[in-house]
Structure formats: structure tokens, C-alpha cells
Length: 249
Image 1: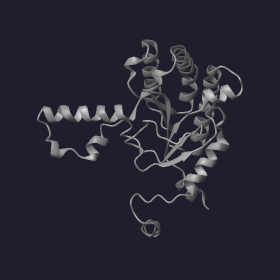
Image 2 (image 1 turned 180 degrees about the vertical axis):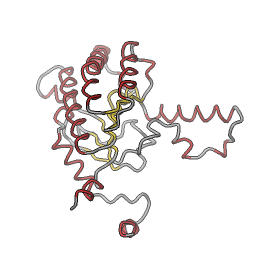
Image 3 (image 1 turned 60 degrees about the horizontal axis):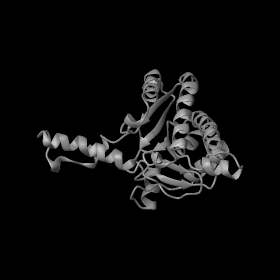
Image 4 (image 1 turned 90 degrees about the vertical axis):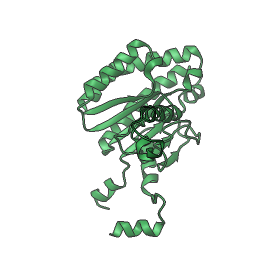
């Protein structure tokens, strides 16, 4: 297989639910916080691996809108870890020409964290090597609801009619509308569900589930996911024969 053929089998955009930090720590009789700290190390390794492999975009589910239900102490520790990690890593991400972006409702976060998020986005805005998207206080239902609210205001203002609304119009208001939709979704930790993550964007995404807990997810585990992706035939509603004919055209 040529290098061009290999690159064509790589996903342009990978989305990951990083699950299993707490279970990783519990299995070692360690506090859950240690699992989250080790999970940050895994994030660094996977971001570097994706950039080196030529992946154009990586979206990580860092904190869901449902995670506020966790014990208050754990949420506080997660916020502290989030702030310290941003402060520590933003320069390295910038040096590697990685553009950092955040999606989700920021209003619930402390002011200091919101300022850091904005600072990271502004500092890396012109970088082109890879988009790193952090989903924080994000939910797929929130994302779609927000998009529909924008469109509903246009209807109320008389700018458009209800019959003018199309999937493309809704998609244009959804988070990440300027990026290709994820080709590959990975969830670590053994659970096999999407958990309100990128519900609109994952419509035709290839799903990959692994029992590996997130702190143990390394480049080798990523390569296994990429090999699984490369072996699949993506049909987008067509038959397998049609896909093969299009390849030969």
C-alpha cells in the first residue's frame, strides 16, 4: 500500500470519550483524582500521536453537562486540574501549531477558567497543524437545542419561513460546523454508548469501543482503533458495490 493510500484510510477527524479514569485508580487502590491526573498524561500522548499521524482534528469529551452530578469535591478537583493543565500545556500546543477550541456552555465555569479558555483560543487561533477541540460542559442535546433556538429567532423575526429550515441550515449552527464531521468515534473503558456526545455530528461516524481504560490508552491502542477504521467500508447509504465502483471511477 502506498503512503497516499495509507493516508486516505486515516480519519480526518477523531472524537473520543475518555472513560475509565476512576476505575483505573480504583483498580490500583488509589484516589479517583490520581486517575484523572494520569488521564491528562494520556491526553498529551494521544494529541501528539494524532498530530504526528496527520489527523486534522481531534475532539475530546473532557466534561459533560451531566458530570456536574458527580460529588462536589471531585468536580472541584476536576476544575482545578483543568485550570492547571491549560496553564501548563498551552505554550507546548502553540509551539506545535495546534489550534485549541472549546465547545459547550461556559457560563457555569469559574471566571478564571473561562478567561483561560478564551486566552488559549486567541493564542492558537492561527495555527494550522491540527484542531484540538475540548468539549467542556457540553451535551449533544444542548448543542442541537441551541442551534434550533438561533433558527427559531430568525423565523420569529420574519427572516425565514419554517419550511425553509433544512438539515444543512441546522448543521450550520451546530458546534464544529466548520470542521469535517468525525470519521471515527472512540470510547474507552468498556461502555458502549454515545452518552449525549456530538449527537448531530456522529450520524455517519464509525464507532469503536475498547475495554482499555483511558489512562492506559496509548499510541498502540490508538493504532488498533485506526486499523479497525481502515478495514471498514463506509457506504453512507450506498451499497458496497456502489462504493467500489466510485473508488474505481
